[in-house]
Length: 133
Image (cartoon, rainbow, N blue to C red; front, side, top):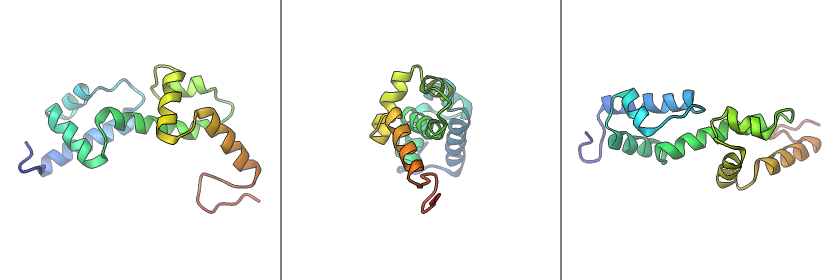
């Protein structure tokens, strides 16, 4: 258990394992309960640990990872948004769209449009200062 708001080295190891598990299995239906069992930690302690490391609840961290990973796929115009949503663990394209907009301020379709516009103008958004002209 945390003592005076601190975690033991063993706690940090389990918290890091939980974060790594999320990053590997983000597209699966991962619950906080399942994650706590996976790393052998009390759920409240794990929630506090993930929050202290990432500034987000377990659920919100999973959503953040899903959106980050899906963003790269949006740059492939051959993939329908519905396919990208399902691939990255969203229950529907509307859930994906709402979460994407919440995190980025734009819809997946707007992101694609701006990505295409930037590519046409010679700007590569995948890296700072990269100019394609």
